[in-house]
Image: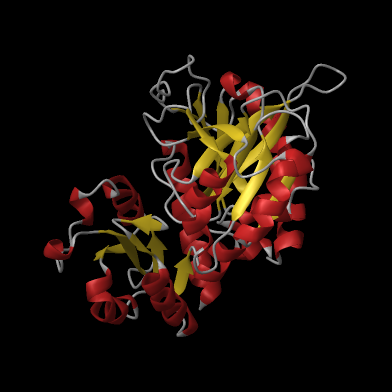
Length: 354
């Protein structure tokens, strides 16, 4: 019998008018709440809104652990207030996943640059200022093939762009000026390809550099139409897979809007054709990731995911994989196979935290 004193808060977004409603069992996280309850854990639902941060902080100090599902950008607000609250709660002895410091190290797109030399990486550049993008993007545009630019913090394809020169890239970087034509398409749903001057595109990207922002510049992966594989990870073990064939930046017909994203299908961690990816992630990449970003495996989130595109096949004709992004702030939905590992990991982390 599990000690009934274990209390876990599930923090999820809510409009201000919903506070102080404690409605996790009617939310999309009801399955998580049921699984935790079945293990003898008392579940406390905490709908979050910045306007109630002080009251929420007091509630979270009364539990043993906090599991958070709040997007990095939600209804025009970022997570700065919430992250400060969670850091304070964790400093006072409550287990928090994902901890804001862990999110900062592995949950923004900057991790693509920091781990670019790993075998899951590709040609990747980081621009922390607009002036650096003005100087560096021309070089990457003429290096061959389209580029994918991603703001460091974002979701749902916002601030993610496929960019290429309108004319064949036979010119040198010095020949690209503010008037040079580009073909660009954002990864947001229903976005169509646009043609605009280089200078206009720079202006459009300027807001991404506000605060501690920036832009990642990566080589576009030509096998994107083969789909994307998502690995759902409970701390350091793959607990399930997701597969999506039609996804962001899937090639569209000339002049047409992007095709509608296809559904993501979920699979157990035993899916045979993904075992090589699972083994690479668990036995090689996680050690490298933790070393590069300065984390111990024990600090990894209770649940997180990594999205992979197919890279070029190797000399033996076997698939390689390129990291597309890591999601930490709000990983949901996920395969049912991950529920029991999530519960077991939560219990272990609470006991270790005491």
